[in-house]
Length: 306
Image 1 (cartoon, one colour):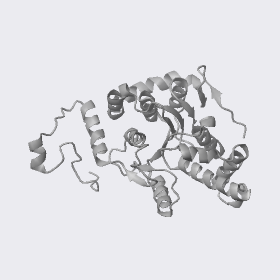
Image 2: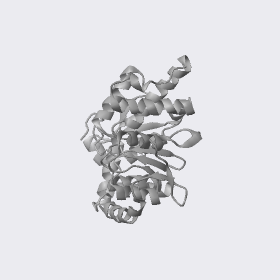
Image 3: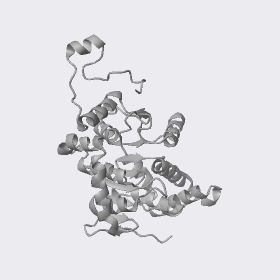
């Protein structure tokens, strides 16, 4: 498959259908920002402090106009971003073009083949010789799967000298995955282990992806911490990534699956309400004592997801 990475005039890598659609994409992104108050509130609150400064974030999530607002929120908070779509049909090409031109490395277009899809996923995770991303925004678990399968294959290669055999499976898509990993081992037999060693954690959006994560947790094969955004009320990927990044050296998150802490769900809800013009007041100590909750929250038990 003859695909090659292109570069913008500023040197940013990308592969999209038509970069000339960027102006149209930018117009729709500006319209979408008005309808996404939570993300815009995150920019207003956290943007000045740049909490993601130095962070590499790879995202495998539908490359739509709304995702473009998410990507530019991450970059506004200081992150460097590489992105691909988690679905071969869901990319909005004008959104991909605008982000590729203005904000982040993007590898996505509508109507990808499965070979192209996995090529894009690999490009999204490939940050060069310094390893992979610090954080992953995953949807469906494919970026997470590629790293896990890559690590497993590299360890087998180190022990036995055997590379993955794409013909060992009847699954057409998994043949593609094994081919990518096999070729990667030939170029760098520690590629995926370098990614694993650098990774702080992943947030996962879907039921399917979350199920995979819990299965790996149960078998002891999960390689890094994961936040289950699917079962968090607000599904805030930005806050989940911030939590993982903030706690990267504390040891708070082990190689397990977590839901977004309740007080952070409440934080996201407050950001939305404030941006929508609601007047928010803080509980007084007497009010908090009267209803038996901590004055700073959380206001309901962690097992109660609103």
